[in-house]
Amino acid sequence: GDSVTQMEGPVTLSEEAFLTINCTYTATGYPSLFWYVQYPGEGLQLLLKATKADDKGSNKGFEATYRKETTSFHLEKGSVQVSDSAVYFCALGTGFQKLVFGTGTRLLVSP
Amino acid sequence: DADVTQTPRNRITKTGKRIMLECSQTKGHDRMYWYRQDPGLGLRLIYYSFDVKDINKGEISDGYSVSRQAQAKFSLSLESAIPNQTALYFCATSQQAGTDTQYFGPGTRLTVL
Image (tube, each protein chain N blue to C red):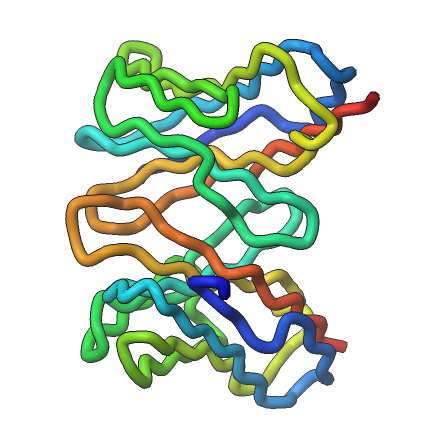
């Protein structure tokens, strides 16, 4: 069945460091791909998405490119801030209005 | 005001009690979902509803039931709560068609003693 695999955390970085959180997927067909972010004590918020191969989603300095050949959707940011500390979830849309989530990766950014 | 609201935000209950978690939305979306979040397991789908007359089981529906009272309201019930149902529960909504994007409520933290 469809599945998403993310790197385990926590990922610990200093402010202004470069961030990569790896995400790979297994799916039939051509899923949409998403990154959601969960700040402490809050629900999940859509961070960015891509709906077809080679699309790049971007928001708030974060980027991810839909790579069909490597079945990946890695999240990157050039310079993280303390306020980026959160849990990040990769997800795929099955095309039937259901999402399959990864297990989440906690990011901790220190000043 | 938040588009997707959940009540209560926190609840502590005892084994065997019946619990209802409520979700309301003002986004006008037809589709609503209930998830639970456990550390290290991500989000898992409990039930989903594509309209008022449509209810579907997700991957972990055992021990849960739902009611779609209106387009804007979707409730999750635990008929007889057990400790391993201690988790964070999220409601989400999405548009009728054309996108898989879902919008989440703030969550309900449920503890079953």
